[in-house]
Amino acid sequence: MMDISIRGVSKTFGETTALESVDLRVPSGRLATLLGASGCGKTTLLRIIAGFESADAGGVHFGEVDIAKVPVWKRRIGFVFQSYALWPHMTVAENVAYGLRLRKLPKETVAEKVAAGLEMVGLTGRDRHRPGQLSGGQQQRVALARALALEPDVLLMDEPLSNLDAKLRVEMRREIRRIQQETGITAVYVTHDQDEALEISDLVAVMNGGRIEQIGTPEDVYERPETTFVASFVGSVTLLRGRIADAGALALAGGDKVDFGRPLGAAGSDVYVALRPEDLRIVENGTAQFTGKVVRSSFQGSVRESVAELPGGELLAFEHRRPLPTGTTVGLAADRFTVIENDTGVA
Image 1: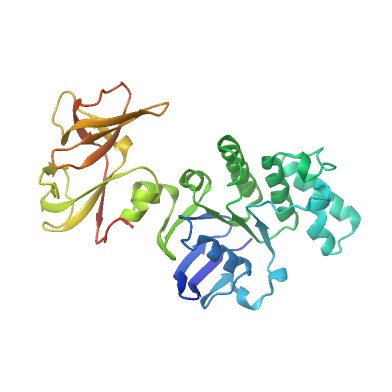
Image 2: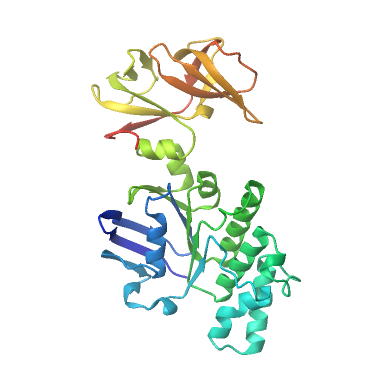
């Protein structure tokens, strides 16, 4: 296995900038996710890594090898497509064996690799089925087995679960993570699903407008967002805009002043404070940092999420257990928050 190094990659299509000087390193044996909305450049970057597109500037290295000089068929990659891309007239075994036969491997070797691949993805005994006889999840397992049968150095996956229903997506992303960890293959995974990215990744690269806004572990991008875009794209969040008044106080744009109890930065600085709903608690006996009226509430299974309107008009989402009628006045305190400086605002 080997690491992937992306250095200053840019790409335009006519007057549209798809990628702008992108840098990313994926260590050997790790799974990195390119996370972002449609049109952010994540699939274009994946296709450049694969060799299906060429960069206008910059380069991609597998280890020390500049792969721009390596033909696609020699790059030792496995690619799993969103559409499965299985041959409908072939059996499961024939689909998995397709690339192996192109390499003119002995029949016995092909049979062994096909059997091992199907066992890895839990499809032993389905080798004679055709894709039309399988569920969507099973078809995606076949596509994964076909990619891994070639024993690639790098595995690339382009939104492989987007055609599956919600429950099956959860099952399959856990299977993909299990297989990636068992094989130790270096992998790059494209998705717009934040839950998917947080669960399966070693590294998450949050993309926006052809650039990477932040690279880090799932914990980094969720708990320590560096920009308001990352904070708002990854998970639910309230962004309070204001100016640091003194040591631990923030003067909100609506006029209120909130004491957060610890230094926020240099006095006079304009900042955002990012608050996750789970980091706010209702204060019944004690000093509340925020006081507001509940304007809406929703039941989400294990918790309820409500939104309180503060006197200055700001809306603050928080989690709780017992029902809260609309119009209830609540006091809230933040157990955790993130200060975001030098940010131009939510994209």
